[in-house]
Image 1 (cartoon, rainbow, N blue to C red):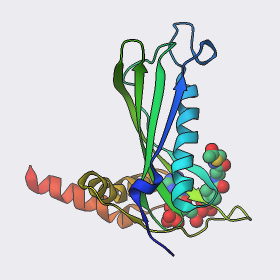
Image 2: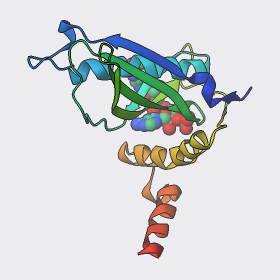
Image 3: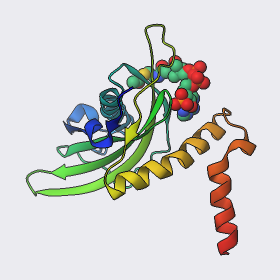
Length: 175
Ligand SMILES: CC(=O)SCCNC(=O)CCNC(=O)[C@H](O)C(C)(C)COP(=O)(O)OP(=O)(O)OC[C@H]1O[C@@H](n2cnc3c(N)ncnc32)[C@H](O)[C@@H]1OP(=O)(O)O
């Protein structure tokens, strides 16, 4: 199967925060943001897989800064690593105030998608090639995040979490 570059999956989505998207304080609802993030990340995953995908996992998302009515939410998504049938997608979320010309990062998150066939079963996907230093770092770290996710989901035995074990060993030797 043909390998693909990480950058080929890059996807950007812009949404203007309208009154229907906000709570009573005039801030963007967290659930609405998660919905937009799911769509943007799924598009990035589909670009890599050239196939339909489903969301299988959403890592913890922290809301560092509220996003206001009238601001523009920009979501940037890119696949960090492809495994056998699943991909990890990293997102950075920014809030832009267009009249003031400001752009502030508000969130960062990782979603995991599985490529599925016509019977809704997992389907093999192309490998991913990281090019830049940042892509290579995210690629290497993705294995650790995957182990943690699968551990928490009860899909990986602790004794098989080798990346996490290596990290703990490294930490113990440093302190
Ligand atoms: C875009 C959307 O919003 S889609 C709507 C919301 N999502 C859904 O409805 C999906 C519902 N879930 C499902 O249909 C199934 O769980 C499937 C098809 C995703 C996976 O089926 P499973 O029987 O669990 O498959 P299986 O155990 O073989 O795992 C398949 C892949 O998913 C990965 N996976 C499974 N569970 C998790 C998890 N909790 N976290 C991360 N990855 C996971 C596995 O590691 C494997 O990846 P790999 O092939 O790259 O190693």
